[in-house]
Length: 471
Image (cartoon, rainbow, N blue to C red; front, side, top):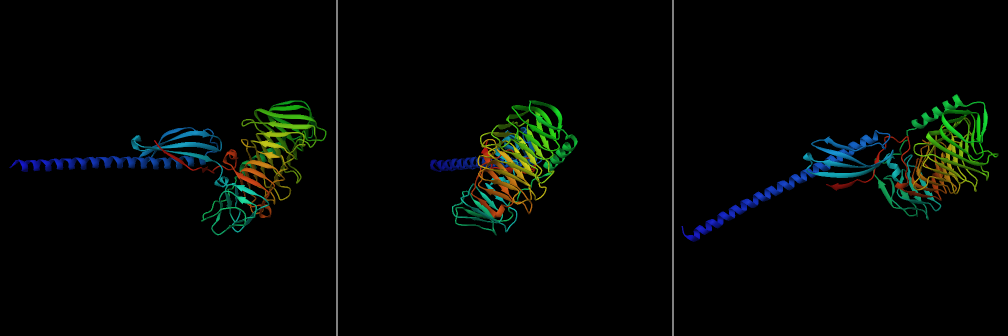
């Protein structure tokens, strides 16, 4: 063999070796990339499964404030961790870390969840029946999204700044400003509150009134430090510069007037400690007068609340919270329950509280927030307003009043909400509106102005858009 032939054979041999090495390297690289992709997909699917699993746990838990981190929960061939970022009774932010077998790849998803139903993600959600009608009129603005179970007309000079959703067989119409989006069935349903929590409270309070109300009228004009137990009266009135503190039950078989009579004067301060203070009236419970010399300050907190209750003993009975134009009524961290009626008026201010009206009859059965300067909820201190009255209207927000928080009215087939001259920030969820209209009102969706979801909405879990990251 000559030198040229030998050299040619060597070149061919070297080329074959290089080709073999290239094929081997490419094969190894492809295998590595493929394994990485498979592991990443496994971690991704594990994180999704972990999210669904944890949301199911939350749906069965009535209080999220004590949720704790969890690690290495097995799922298929992988596992996931749950890390709590922040938690309150009705809202939670958490991260799920999905891990492939051997933790070779991880994917994270961060979620913010609320106990509120999905309907509370709209500025206005209304939804009793298909075929029903709503008109937005008289310089009204809905700043956020609208859900319309039936047809909505937005008149000239009125607007919906977000998206106006409706079923595909209904319409959003009118010469006002809006953007329509038709939704194919199934449609988001009107959320139903579980009234049993409030029904049980009402039954308990009525029994306590029957057991501890007396035939003795009393006027309280000195400080009272409650030490637990029950303080019974027929009618109780307060007057003077006094403080009611501690914890316990003040029960009257008839009326409770907290600086509310014409003869009262001075400032009443109610500051619970070591537990709650309960005011239970067999007839009406009134906070403050319309005189120019009485002030009331109710200073509860998350662990020490003030409960104000009026029994349905007659059609005229109610919880009334009010003030004179030159005086002050402030209520913080209270639970206000009117078996028949609640009225907040005259510029009174309520924060961090829940107001609830039950469904007892069509006569004087409603929750009303009224008058310029009256504020139920403020930014950072929102409230829950709940009416299940079957009256028209069973919920009234009017005459310049403002509400910050979650506003809910469900009146079955007969109850309506009246929103006229109102300012609302948070979310308004109602089955139907009086005269089929929202009038001269500004309603703004604001997640930041939604409080912790009230009792009665257990089982609802809605989430914000998930945020994904590789690790």
